[in-house]
Image (cartoon, rainbow, N blue to C red; front, side, top):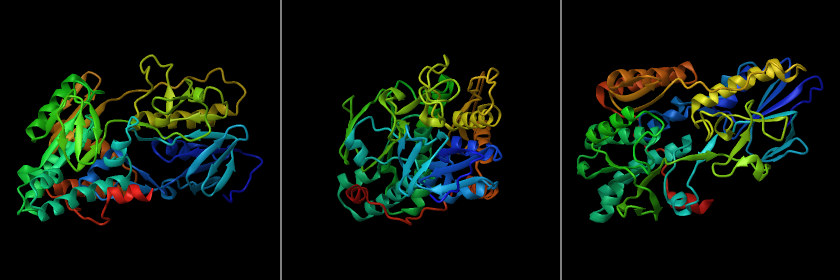
Length: 435
């Protein structure tokens, strides 16, 4: 990888430039460590706004920022664009598509991938939304299928092209359903005047008894009512069993014909080869860590963010939520631990990591959102303003904040999605055949 060896410094290799990995990379003291950050992309993605890219609300460069621009302190810092495919724990080496590198300390912050729960048909035919390329694929699919609907007189074909099925009633599914419903109401009738847009159906399928499982019952009911008002068909206690590319098969027997199935029903860790079964939770592919984010068997390997699975915290017996907030807090904690404690002999005063939950939120559409802040519950316009402010200031880079804000202002007053462009036509079958 063409990285110089400094005998005076311990080498820390960080795999992943998501919320967790970036926090560590930015804050590690360079006079103590040589820091190497590896990621398969040269940009950081603000994943909470991927759904807006998919529904033509924002361009991808509004939610992405160059890693090399984010980390400006380049002394003893190296970034390499590479895909890590294996870790040799015994030899302290990681292997990538551009070569291998040795480490003194390894921090795994690779995040998560879509969890299809072992269903190959769903994996092959549905559309995920965990990355910018996937969000762009979804945007192209939505627009392409309306173009195709104009060309066919086959009622069954047109129904499948204009039916949208979102599987998963968490924040991603709720926000995506709301965005599609607003497109149906305010945008698509003007783009496609020769189509009966009222025949477009949006279905939100949730396997559990309510939406937004991680939020309060009050917020879940509010989200349910807001989506109903927008015309979304909500199916509760509706487990998806299979999807063949044309029909969604559910456990309740209510099957839905659609070419547009968006899978937002769960995630799992983006596991890297090299660990043993006893090192991970195999159900969700997350690495087991102790209260200090250190792996259970390897003193020089740490895991943070979505890939880390800490079970010793009584408040989170199934691990911390796989969201941005725990990842950022774990990244800050580990950077502080490395800077102040790791190389010191006296480690008695090290405090374990404790996740501080400040709240949860989800937006359903214009002037519609829900927020849970401990005992405080917000809904409607005020919650929407809070949601927008938090996401705006969480974006990396001043330019991204300005562009996002300008887009939101224009869309607020004009109901206009300005980036309804099929830049890169997408063919699901062709993509799968090429893999």
